[in-house]
Amino acid sequence: MNENSAKAGLEKKRRPKSGRRRFPIWLAAVLLLAGSLWGIPWWNERPLRQAESLLNNNNPEAAIKVVDAFLKTDSANSRAVALKARALVGLGQAAEALRLIERVGAASVEEMRAYADASLILQKWSQALPVLEYLNQQTPGDSDLLHELSACRAKLGLYEKAVAAAEEFAVLDGNAARGYMLIGMLERDRGNNQKCCDAWKRVLAERPDADGLQVPPEEFFLEYGKAMMLSGLTVDAAPMLLKSIAIKPQADAYSFLGKSLSQQGKRTEAEQAWTKALLLSGSIRLAREGLAELAMQKREFAQAADWLKPLEDQADLKSTTGFLLQRIATLLNDTEKAQYWKERTEQLRRQEEVRVNMEQVIFNSPDSLWARVFQAYHLAEQKNSDQAKTVLFPFVKEDAHPFILSLWMSLQNGTALPSLEQVPLESF
Image 1 (cartoon, rainbow, N blue to C red):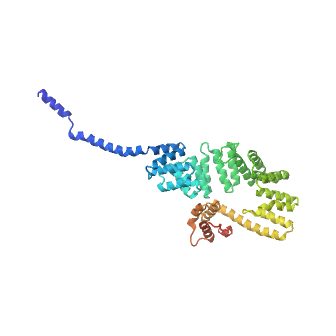
Image 2 (cartoon, rainbow, N blue to C red; image 1 turned 180 degrees about the vertical axis):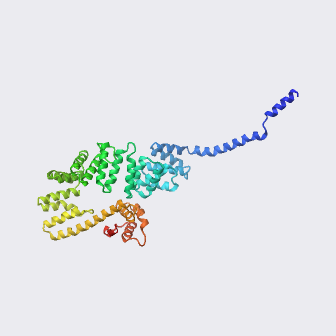
Image 3 (tube, rainbow, N blue to C red; image 1 turned 90 degrees about the vertical axis):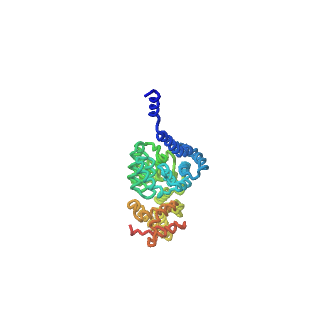
């Protein structure tokens, strides 16, 4: 074999076959096309990544400007719409945020949080709850989420579950004070004043000055003092009420302080406290009742009647006031007025008895038919008719109890709520 033959053979070995030479070209073409299909949208959506970064850094004002500019060129982009909704929640524009999320759906945890937050702002508790429950399963141990979940459950009358979420919240690092504050609020709302006091005692162990809680310090000390009074801890309540007054004088604080002092036999100090309460709020019931009773003890019956007169026409008149007015009329030998207040007081007591029973049904059997009906009634009283209708709707049937149908009609027509005297107490 000569030199030329050997060289030709070597080149033949080195030269790749035509098929092998073309394959990398095809592969490169495919990769180039794929890169283009992925890269162009990625490049175009740079503003959305910028907006998301701004949202994550708590700057919804800047984020919404970026998103709005993007939507001018791509108004149907669902990710952009969802980002705008998140920004709107941050700006407090909950109704528009909710409308946008309902239009495009919530595809991420952040979008579901925005939906839940918007619903909470709008007091749409029924819409927020299932989303919060799902998020709690997906991200357990999220303190903000647990706090919202607890509050939302309570708004729908699910107090046992609300307390359970609050207890989970309280054991997380750094949350003890706020957690026991929340537990106390829930126990107070369902009438467990002793449990409320137990929880709030732990709050003060963490925060002696009651700072950094969900309510201002003066409000905490006031509510703690009131819970103590309702638990029979009359003497212990006074220092809490005085702490509240020292921070910010309030009619309620002076009113309950007067009651505490009166029950301790300190009538002069009680009278002074109640007088100060009326200087701050002329219609405070507890102070006027207390001053009326002091006047009656002095046999100043006309003066007692004058103390109670501003309460007579109040929409939320209490049976305690009615009973005092009945006693005063009797002592003044006004038989006609005494009979009127006797009948009125009996009516008020019946209504109050119904309310107590309603609350007990909500607390003890939250998933029962009547618990849901009563919760709808409470929501309607709070002017939240949309939620009231949502809660009541499953029970509106042709054979439903007349009270349920009356309540539904009042919600539909925007008329006065039915009288609680229609509630079938015998059913409980």
